Image 1 (tube, helix red, strand yellow):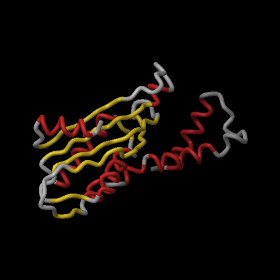
Image 2: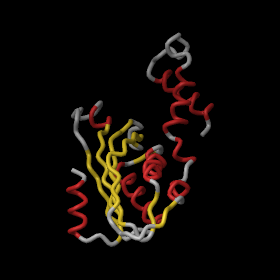
Image 3: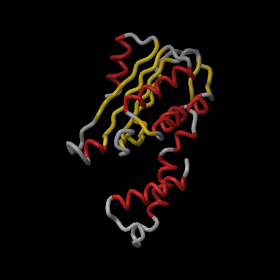
Length: 181
């Protein structure tokens, strides 16, 4: 990321909306915003496969579910935050990954400009590509500030997306989805 370019863009934005970028309350804002973007968009410098590479051998193919993984991301349409929780389920095929690594996988993709639908798919695909499970289901439930703070302003509205990949029959899918409620 080019911190200086971000700082200049914020100065230009402040000018464009009619603010005095040199007044005391705004003087350090360009630097603060640039540092914030470095943090909340740090997923571009991360690789989910790095987190999902540390696996453990198992003899079972019982479903693994990690629920309520909190995340925040940035909508690529409005550059406004969305946040919520993600649930991950997969059926191992000889190996599992440490549970914290699933949360790190979510963070890798959430810390990029995103669409919720894309985020859900990317996490599920990363699990399939790296763990080679029999199948995986990822459910994402999020509140979008572009829906709650602007536009239609519907506070509390949530968007739910899910992706199913691999060999998951309808009974298993329905069982997992009911466990996630």
